[in-house]
Image 1 (spheres, rainbow, N blue to C red):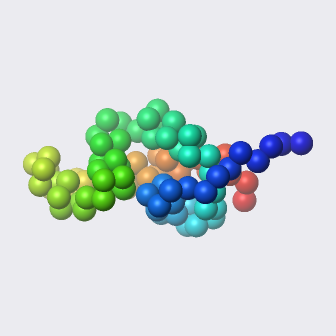
Image 2 (image 1 turned 135 degrees about the vertical axis):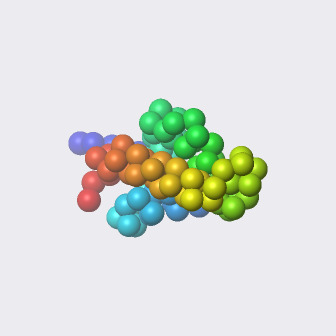
Length: 94
């Protein structure tokens, strides 16, 4: 029988997960999520996701500090969410 190793996600992780999965599940192994973020995202995607979700900065602040357009930040975060979703969607039973 398969063991349940799922634990509640932190607020930022829940938000990433919900935006990708449409709230299919509020539980996933946080260590797995962090491995996906570290292993599947580009450096820019990791940085933007970290600033946006874990540091609580908005897209305008990120764009201004990096000298890029807000749309660049938005697209990069969107691509990162899709990558996270695609990597995790097979790990959670529906």
